[in-house]
Image (tube, rainbow over the protein chains, first blue to last red):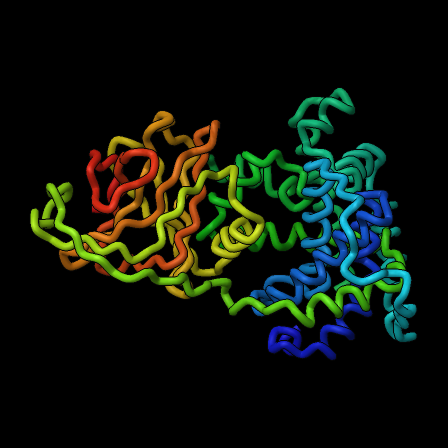
Length: 174
Length: 238
């Protein structure tokens, strides 16, 4: 990331290979539309490029930072309901070649994916439901309370407990 | 907002599940609170695991498209501070003094491009710069006092960008707006002209904010702003 901040495009290329599966995955999960997901994923990576100098490795990993940006942008897009599907891409996406992830990236990705799936399994059904509506559907806590017909305070409690559980899992692996 | 109320909202903030107003309140409240910010960071790390379970291979061509765009995209400076364009200074005489220590004949220098902002019409670029200020590790809050409560300027010694915020500012009326003034060594400089949104929220990006040795004042002015203060001071750092 430090090299990316100095304008090193080769470093950015490698960073893309490493971060694109979770970034594209979360954007696609929230937006559910592959065309919009590509647009937003592109915005996310351009933002990472522009603001690499602001990245603070003491606060979070580059992966967490990238994923947080991706999630925030996706949720913003869902909420603004601007389905700007007709916006022309700057480069024809289908004309270019396949990205080639390195074997190390793929192994790492499978490991991360399994770990995350395990973590979700560890949540109670009630916690998982709130997490799914909040994180994956992009609903606000007020909307979740309406949808599930539960008090706002309950949504807060479940969200807090769920994240605490995910955090404990992380902590136990460190 | 109390600490307990804030902490309650942090998990929802990490999930991006707050309503915009609440999100803004959290952003403002945790600026300058390293303890709460690091708690939010931890929660975001936990939330980021949720993205991993959804990891997907991006479509062919996305990478090339991104690389093509970054090849023509300039990177921002560290810390997010940008040099504002400075217009030519002009001196005009001031009609009356409105803070102690400012004599009637001091010069008023128009140094900062005057723009009218309201919380609702910030561009994404401005919103990003505002977020960057909130995220600065050493951000401090400068409180202004007067008839209008709650006006704060979040600033940091490591950046010239700052943000003026208020959660509940009265509507100045259609033909009036608020204006910020910086006075230093007898020189009064007009700065941003702004209006709260319909909920009374204000978030104004100040691009070249240097508070050392300055008195910061907000006045009520005609809608387009003034070259020199004409209305009453409604909040001041003095």
